[in-house]
Length: 102
Image (cartoon, rainbow, N blue to C red; front, side, top):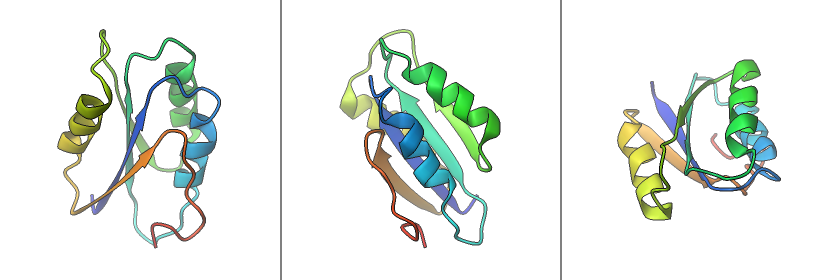
């Protein structure tokens, strides 16, 4: 894989679907993976991410745990999984404009 997009999220059910859609619609001419770290959210974030992954055009890896790991550790664990030449980060309540990854 040439590019990994790492998404860290915690209790962002209002925003995560739009965030993932803004990533998945990026046109860059190469396949890329999306790695989502869901930090033991108490809302429906994990359900939304799981549902989105079923129809996404790019591969989505979901990383979660039984206990809350905190923002820093969530960030680190998803970036450690990324084995691509390039890595991009976005938080689960942000959006990518068209052409961002290009």
